[in-house]
Length: 406
Image (cartoon, rainbow, N blue to C red; front, side):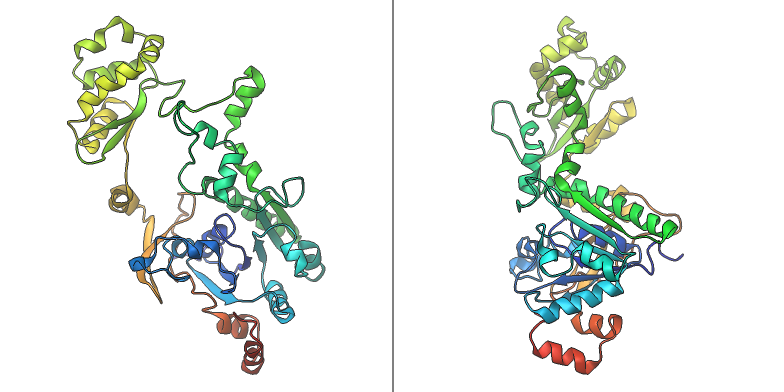
């Protein structure tokens, strides 16, 4: 295999939860050497979230944390100790990239802000991410993607009109902002390659999340129309929904975008009498009678598997897709062909699935690698200090005795 894209790149990662560490996971999967700094005295919140292997809790057993941090070295540093901060500084001197995802001011408290770091490493690419950026009235507010999903406007448009707002699955803004973070880091590295100069990236997850709702913001700005919950419906398309299929909790999504697709849908359904009714002849009529239309469609889908519904609809030119669950995703032939998942063997929980956290693309002649499982807390502290930072065994032992590696 050709040399990996980020081979030779060194990353010091002072980041936790989602948007912070996952960009580092992406870099690591394509060859970068990433050292993840943590402390058992204040573990990453993802380490405390299930599901756990064999349903046994433990900070090294999380099925959420482990797939998100593969290919990294783990260095434990208790930053309340000044000597731990000295080790952190040495790690930064070693690195090309520094990433951090703490509440604004945390790195500065340790003397490791960008302004301090650039004094001894002017070409560093320094990436900070938090809820709302490093300054402004919201900057001091701590939180996670679940809260930010509401702040960014996703919750108010998710769910049904007659019910309270819903939260999209998980910390939604974490997962969509990861791609923006990777793009920013790669851009900064290209800038350094061309100019020899470092860069500071102040990433507001709030602003990143809001950017994904640009059409709705424009609609309000121009038409003063406030977006609200529409369930599975869409103002532009009809029918547009998720329809029950044969089997337990099996569904298929179907969307009709124009009159040609409507005629194709009717043909697939056998041109039933109801489809020739005048009230379904136009988009306006179908929209007005959408609830009844959905019932008719589901009377047809309920006797067929979601796979059959998808295939026959797609063959006719009607957009349709199986609503897949976790089991189906692992067995999906397209994802298997693209090698979206891999396996690694973790020292505590054994073999488990690892995920490609790239953006779904592949570089020619190479693919993301799953070389190492995520580290247990401090698993590689000695290795990192002696091999990467040049400490002698005696120096490491002395620092270990002071309790900084916890």
